[in-house]
Length: 422
Ligand SMILES: Nc1nc2c(c(=O)[nH]1)N[C@H]1C(S)=C(S)[C@@H](COP(=O)(O)O)O[C@H]1N2
Ligand SMILES: [Mo]
Image 1 (cartoon, helix red, strand yellow):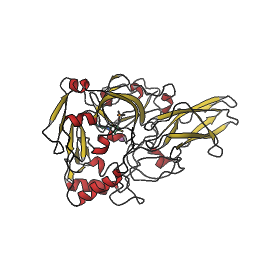
Image 2 (cartoon, rainbow, N blue to C red):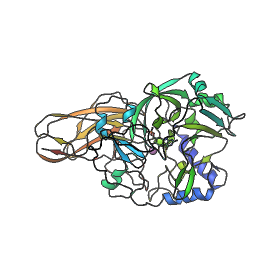
Image 3 (spheres, rainbow, N blue to C red):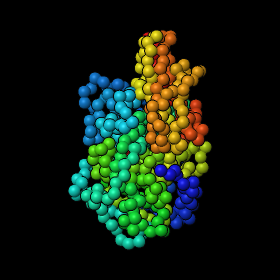
């Protein structure tokens, strides 16, 4: 599928200028609250819960009140309202992440919805006519498409800003497990928008979730929603109703969610209930104070709204895993990119002094991950540090240090994975 149009960055800059001149509309939030949000985002707050939670292997049933599925400790680390997948639990999985191991990122809690009572309403001044409703059955009767894509939180890897770079960031302290890959089936968003009568004058498309309103620091941000530029909305976005051949599980958006290939997780709105099609640019907390890069290296007011995910690699291994000296092992892992597909992966087993090529087990694709392996015979007993770094087809290699931003998004540096040889 095609990549992000180069005009998009310019488009987002235009959206902000229009806002400054009072021509962009704040979708459901007071202007002063939006300004407050942008101001707050530029200041690094206290680091939230960065320490890895202690192992809970002894607890039989780990769960969260806002998550429907079981969250066994072999598969998940709990972080606030969210559940991070343990990378070691992916070792026995293939290209696709089973729903029972797929990370959950909930701003509030999973709503349990009835597909028969559900409908999707498409509305707004970017349509040529009035609002149009689609029932679940009506959506399922439209031509369907399937595609394999990862969903990855923009904050995946955030905890390494603190633990590797000594930098304070706010937000959920994910390690590398806020990602999963699934086979999604659904209707093209473009198909639905055309049937609803999208006009040539449409600019922004705003899907909104049916989960509860989000309240932070005394401000009600409203329901989770983030505008998509119409160019992306009409390109490769799906309104998905199936994950790995089954109806979406409640925690992953049942009955219908957006899948926005290669983009930050927040774009993939779950439990979508309505979509506003606007003739002008829209602003919500999720494309103003949140999901932009703030900090000394970025413009005041933040970077453009985040679009694509970045380049990362992870070992399918628990942190602190032990290996027998002189015992041959096969190290496995995955690398992925929201930009150009992964070209190669190198691994170091001596803290970064020497590197060798990993064997790739998949054909790398944009918006997906590639599995890899290297064989290793640990020679000396003691602590060791494993590293994996990917290079993409545009020639970009994961750096040693990620560029700091106050909310810790898009960590792309090589992660140091400690192990012990005994
Ligand atoms: N309605 C709604 N959609 C949402 C969210 C949410 O809290 N509510 N979280 C977003 C974020 S931040 C991410 S990373 C992904 C996570 O998708 P998953 O829980 O299926 O892994 O969903 C996105 N869509
Ligand atoms: Mo996210």
